[in-house]
Length: 193
Image 1 (spheres, rainbow, N blue to C red):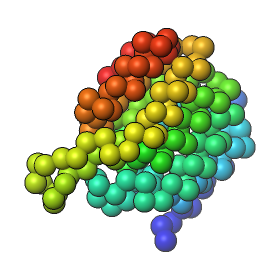
Image 2: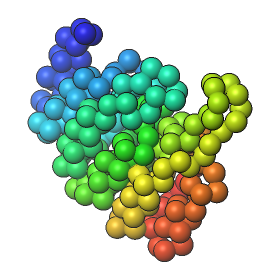
Image 3: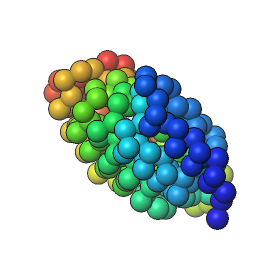
Image 4: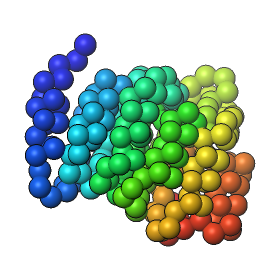
């Protein structure tokens, strides 16, 4: 396995901080075990207001098409974020799919700190994938809308506005429809990309 000593040392310090910080762990090669370590730290009350984990294979995949390979780490993270001080979360390019999005929707709905910004850019959150082979250019879009629908339902429960980044998520008309429906039903979406 990977040497987690540096991450563990950082995680040990985080709960001792007096004021919330922005924690940027982008592109650090964090996988399932490492995100579980971050989740355990968040559970101890780490003072983190902004958590940036983009460009890490948090669900264990190795290729762009490997979404939701192992969601145990992201599930633990979402569960602990519910009671954290995190108000901005960047999970762009983390190999998240419909299953991960379902857990993320729970966090958005149940968070004690108002989630102001959520970035999911470049994750195939509706299971969009290339049909034949990588590079074929033939895509099958919005294979599984279940997680996106749960997220849209969670948006309807928010009291404070949220900025949502869903750019490059492989959404087609079917994927955009639940978002449009939630916004027209009064979801507190301040900006969407």
